[in-house]
Length: 254
Image 1 (cartoon, one colour):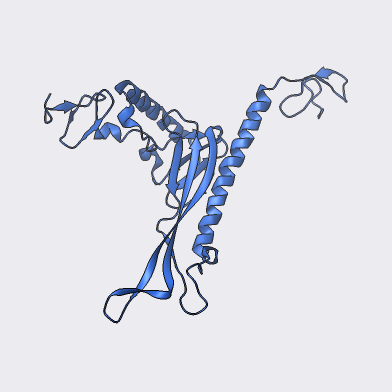
Image 2 (cartoon, rainbow, N blue to C red; image 1 turned 180 degrees about the vertical axis):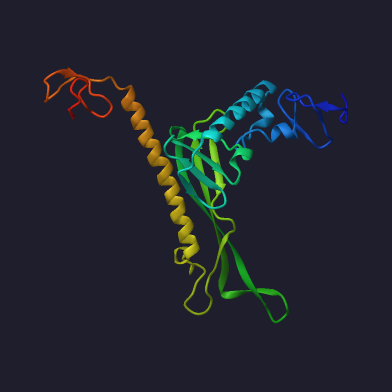
């Protein structure tokens, strides 16, 4: 087949426009079907048509999870982490209309790790010399910029990482010039905006890792074999219920 032969989407069967083809390992995908994939999915080129169809079926089921999702806590302002603490689920999205966006809904127990990466970069600030050329200050002065990235590691069939930026624009700081100052004279923790994103990042890490551990502890406790104990009130040998009460008289036994 030639380079400009007509191509059809192996998912929906529609004709693919000149710039609309998204190659798969064994077929073609139109841009409209590609938009329905998870935004965290990055292995399209190595995926087969069958694997893409499976993911799109999952994405349709995910719409039901989105419809049932009840946000009880929100972390972030632009890209946000939404928590459904009652159902022990969460999602990450920048969309205001989550029904249309269909963000992936994950269980707390799927979180395997969460960390904050602070990216620092700097450029030298120069001045114009007597000959009109740029020259360094003495000591050198720098403009520093900081960006906060959240990296959530997850156990999911279609992606293993959810990475997004907390701040909408870089936090910029300038080193001071003049006697007694050096190129290291910037402490970002003197900046209120920097501190606010640092605090938000810590809240996100704590929220996701603490609830993950709680869920895992509950699962482990539910799977553990129950042991009979003697009720101090009625004297019966009983297997306490989930609230730790005797199955016969209802009195607390532990």
